[in-house]
Image (tube, rainbow, N blue to C red; front, top):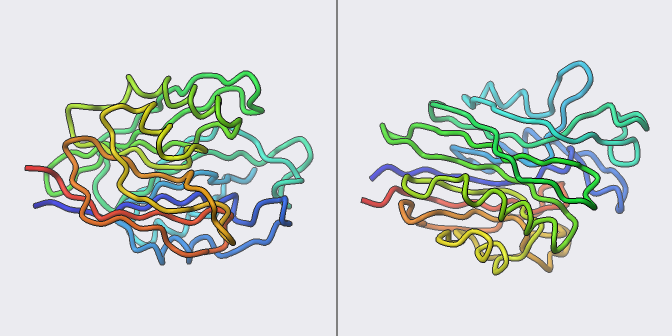
Length: 236
């Protein structure tokens, strides 16, 4: 039975939340320690010269796919200018062959400083079978922002083929599954803030074509979010 390990990890631009002071950490090492076949990485940052903190992961056999829809400021990342020259978005990395990619609209949230967010759908081939991986990072305008984003996304994501939705939903589990009917959570556990987590806002969800063999929240790695990881298989 084909199986894989998938992890989702909000890398927070490569440092702690600005509310606690920007303390950089080794993003590449943290990602490697997740030991995942597929990685979903919200808050991936690209610098003006095009470099990304995750570029070195290509040497580990990953194919990198990413989209960028926001800008950071100097208050968030020390390499950014006040005009927000550093862009950020979401990346999906896969050790399996990538068959297709698609950007999916998640709508507009009036109070969100990012006017329009997108999800990233990457279709990978696992032992000859396609798996759709949808990486998300919803608005932090709780609770309405994440609800708008997920409800906008819901009719666009595959239901009739194996698929996974993963990322930072900025919502607790019950409203997430309410916005995505027919999907179920692969991991249960607190993920935020990483130093003393009290809430789960980082999720991996699967549809009826995917079986969850194991799910877990991992330890503090340097970001303000804890990673989530699941061992998955295709249903017969």
